Every structure is written in structure tokens, then in C-alpha cells.
Length: 148
Image 1 (cartoon, helix red, strand yellow):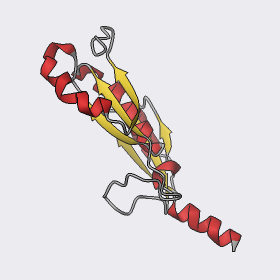
Image 2 (image 1 turned 90 degrees about the horizontal axis):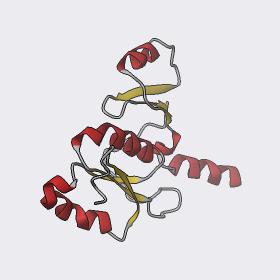
Image 3 (image 1 turned 120 degrees about the vertical axis):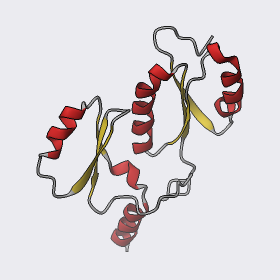
């Protein structure tokens, strides 16, 4: 009975927790990865984040809806905001976001919210200050313009 319960917990767990990630992967490196014999998983690539992901066979997500709880114990998924001051920071933000999603976090992306467009940061403030947000990751390049 204990083994059956443990197997059921594994079956109910969030499949995003099973991915293998490789970060800072160039398109050429990803093409080389595709030539490797892969029999027990699916390989995918996010060209903006430059992240290659291998999901084991049988662990792919079967639904397209996003859940806000971890299936194994109905606790809320950690919610993280990834924010950037400008558009040049988006690749770094996406690398963080894809990594967080693979770790089972719910990610809210707030891009191009620097002080150059005050209305954009004002519009993003409710998302940044939401009580459900456990962490805010800010990518602001060399200027550090977002915190100002």
C-alpha cells in the first residue's frame, strides 16, 4: 500500500519538476544536441532564454492549462515576478523565468518597466506588490534603472 501511495504521489507530481535544463545554449549547440541519440525523453529549446530542456518520456505535460498549486500536496506554487527595466534584458529574464518554471514556480513577467516610461512602472506596481508574490527578480542591465 505504501509503494502504491508513493507511486501515486510521483504520478500526481508536477511534471515541470522533472526537466533537465542546459542554460546559455547557442542555436549551434542545440543543433548538435539534436544529433545525440535520445530514447527516453523530449528535447526542446527556448531561443530567447537560450535554454535547452529535456523532459523524460511519460512526464510531458498532458494539459495546456496552468495550475496554481503543486499537485502532490495542494500547496500553492511559489509565485515569482521577473522584471526588466528595458527590452535588452529580456533574454536574461527569460532564462530566469524558464528555470523557475522548470522548478515548479508560477512566473509573472514584467518587461520594459524602467523609469524612462513612468506609466509602465506605475501600471506594473500592483503585480510587483501582490501579496501572493514570494520573490521579485529584477534584471536592469548596467544602469540599474528599475529600482530608481
